[in-house]
View 1 (spheres, one colour):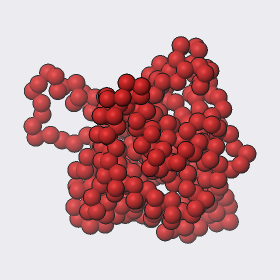
View 2: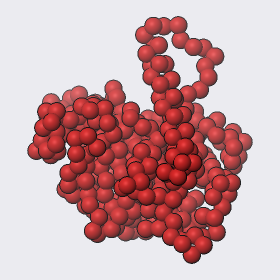
View 3: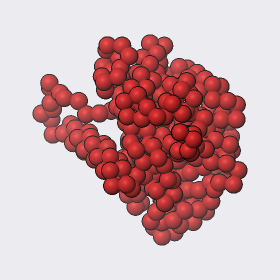
Length: 342
């Protein structure tokens, strides 16, 4: 799939960050705006993390039903479902299944209906990214891109294998298994043979490795893109008027600071890759940005919503979608107006 710009094919990718249901709704607004501009149907690649994986996988799983219907499914889900508490309690009480299993079951019941990665073939190429705790690497599930495209899972160090029969719900669960609420997804050698190099692998939230999800969009040998639009609905570090004095709480604050550093470095990375001629033209926006917001206060309100897996109110859905749509429109007009003229 590609967009036509001045008579030439140009490949556009989307990176959908983590950030729970908040991020998914923020991305939904961005996706609807791209559809309004006639750009979404020509998207070549989606690379997703955590809440972004919920949004991206729902879009691609329902691609054949039409974009409007697919986005409508995501909208309805985010307004009506809360899964975190039920999954946690279910996993604790059930001696035969983990909290992660319960999470995957809830996704399968409410969103994916037993579909596997092979069922994503009619949509654009999509990466659902997790973190491999055995190697410290990004672990991806990739599918879509047409009937002849491969469905694979793996990582650069241990290797990649066929994954046609792997359930979408389990891939999304691995990508969104934020610790410590959800334990990791274990893959033994019968499912992922390269795991024999380390015994077995466990996969946790992709945001641990890269909460923006940009890495696959920079792999020019696998995914040669001309543009990479990064929608960041995560949790940027914010100034505190009451910083902790507790030694126990310092650890959480330290992790938040480390995540903010990684986030900043990733933005620098995609910019420098493009400047060196080794990456796509980057466009990005974060949920706390006031530059381009539609209504005063949207950035502040959107950023204040929790990054959990609880259903969103009508007001929250309205502001998150409006804000995501407004920011992508502002960045396109400022930095890639040629895409709007395609």
